Image (cartoon, one colour):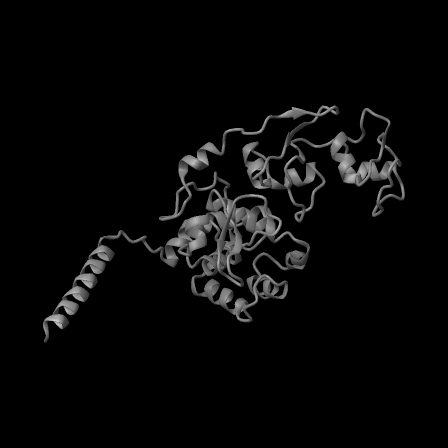
Length: 316
């Protein structure tokens, strides 16, 4: 070998050696096994089943599939276990190549929030037919999710069913009556951004409680708020926020919105309201703290119609 060739060989050997040394020195993130993932999140899946009537087996199987047993980038760095994208989301986000380059995904403070948001996501109108199936009918649920457009993979139902039967996840669907609600597990999944101290700090009230003219407690939405965060802050269920504020599962939360923490009243102190340009009946109901259905009852023929500027709306 020539001197020039030897030097080139030595340089290459040195580069490979130091690269390997550096690689060996790097601590690797521990890979979570499927059984560990199931054990870690089975109680959370049952909790969601109790509250939303979604089979625990389906929630677990989707989590396993979408997050690669909690090892995916989205799960580790954004606590996103179900691959839910940003549509209608005002919280933190993370970008990752998916169907398109730099697709936007939802980012959560905790994995528990991801499970909760997944359940809320499945309350959208296109998924409502699923709730006609029994909570133990995981096969119909798996096929229905594909039919509703949750995934584009034609084998998606088969993948879910295989996971459920292989790991006997269906047994959790029968625990609805025996399950005793506990506080959500705060333990972090190894390598994820979820931290106990962040979870603990989120329990401190960050919104100033105000009282409306109708003597109902409310808060004003800030940038980055979600229904889940507000519900958790004031120890309310998501269903309570939706009910108290005449919301549907598809309504988007915007900064400046009023969110009531108590049921609204049947009537306002004021007799009537003069509609402004662009106002809706829901806007008026929120402004005065009046139940939307009562507002429609006092203003017959208005359901489904747009308000005209200057129109009088009866409040009592």
